[in-house]
Amino acid sequence: MWEATVKILSILGALGVFLYGMKVMSEGIQKVAGDSMRKALATMTKNRFSAVFTGFFTTCLVQSSSASTVLVVSFVNAGLLTLVESVGVIMGANLGTTITAWLVAFIPKFKIVTIALPMIGIGLPLFFTGKNRWRSFGETLIGFGLLFIGLSLLKDQVPTASDITGGAADTVKYWITFIQDSQYFSTLLFLFAGIILTLVVQSSSAAMAITIACAWNGWLGDDPLVVFQSCAAIVLGENIGTTVTAWLASLSANVNAKRAARAHFLFNVIGTIWAFLLIGVITNVIWNSLHIFPDWMIDIKTSKADGGIPAGLVKVAFAVAIFHTTFNLTNILLLLPFTTKIADIVQKWVKDKPNGEDAPTIQYISQNLVDLGELNIVEADNALKNFSTHCISMFDGYVKVFDNPDEDMSPLVSKLKGMEDDADLMMHDITNYLVHCTSQEMSEQNAEKITGMLRITAELEECSDSIYRLVKLAERKYKKGNVLSEEHKTNIRIFTTEIKNYLEFAHDTIMKKADLEQVAEFDIKTSDLRNQFNKLAMKRMKDGNVKLEMININTNNELRGIANSLTHIIRTSSEIAH
Image (cartoon, rainbow, N blue to C red; front, side, top):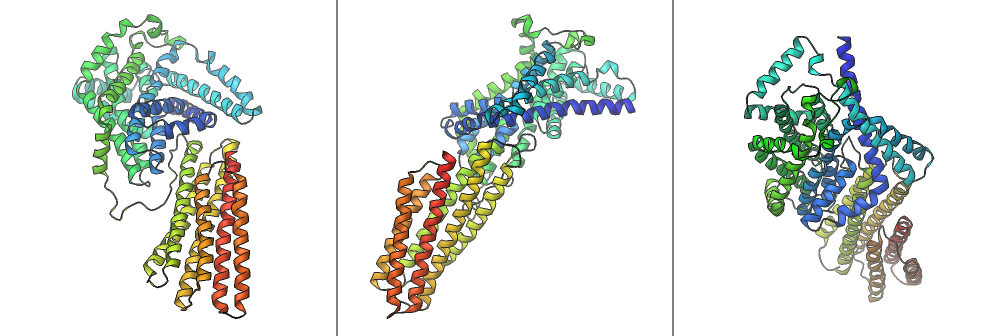
């Protein structure tokens, strides 16, 4: 009993080293190449072929199709990717995850320490002594080394079927043999086993490594072709199981993000169905074609005592890698022409909300295995721009209320109150989102960027508050029966026009470098307008309506307050961009 417990814990430990190595490596790569990956996902997806390549490239880097598809869901949620573009990226992500099978296939060809330990040896001093990108590069090397060591440990820690004796082991062997004799029923059961395995470990890469380790060690039988066919069925199941992560991530997201997750599921299920029906033909063709590959690619040490693989099962991992790649590549070629059709299907599957657009919220979407804080910052960029657009819409509403004193504007005032509440919610959500992004260690540059973004968020919320206070001032003026003179109206329209121009200028420069001389001109001009108009109001107080002039002064001060917030926003954005 004790030995069995130790062995189980050892297998879990090997799996833990593999998963932790993947996490460290992925987060290191995000810090080294995060900007390039963000730009690729945001700009290189305009046609279906470049979208597939972008998904493939991203997944090869982060070594997790789940992480890539969660990122796609996040970008669709932010409006950075369209639904059709996301389908192409998801297809590429499926192909990118096949790299894991090739890594597993080639791991036994050499002693792992000859590569893994030197990688960690190079990465360690860089991690502790390097700065910024060099430190992140060291982290990436350490992660790669741990990933390789984890794969090797997993191969060695899974016991061979012949080494285990007893009733439980014999029962497992009996049922596996019984299942394998059932042809399509066997394939179906192994397919479900692949789904469950991926759901448990939450990583198709880890599930792939476990599957091949079990095959090498005889748990799926001794006949190499039968073992390969069982592994192929498990791989198909893993292909469906990996979609669950993105599906769960989309639950709190908007309609389009849910559709992207369903598109991932639909694409993988369609591929699994045709591959399931043809699995016998496909596996036989691949197995009988192995002889065309050079021996050095397939031959692995066969002495178990030396850490090798039993002779009869040598080719299984290589065949699985070929099957995994062939299946995903074929599925892409078959379905790539139908990306628009897939998008149409999921649009009918996930209906638009009956009350129109989703609420203006932003949710932090990631997964436990590989945190995407570095890459998800781009979603916060977009959320800030949406917040800025929201403020401009509110200001347009205020101007409409001001310009129509003789009409009942109470419905618009109520709408603007709702928009002010939405602005509070947007500030809360963006702030929480940025805090989530910093929950994992990230580059110094991005940490400084998030600090600036938090300040921009607060200033945008202050803008929305000032705009709503302007609405209340206008409403109060009309309710009291105060009538503005043409001079009043002209002055306020001059000021509001200047603020509208400043709002649009700020919107165009959020998270970008701005012309600071032009900013200074806006700042000086709005300050001068406030001082000029307030002095005129003070003069009119002697002979006019004091309450009306106080409303006028408060209006000028609120308009100037908006300008102050915009100046802070633009300067902070320029600092971040610089």
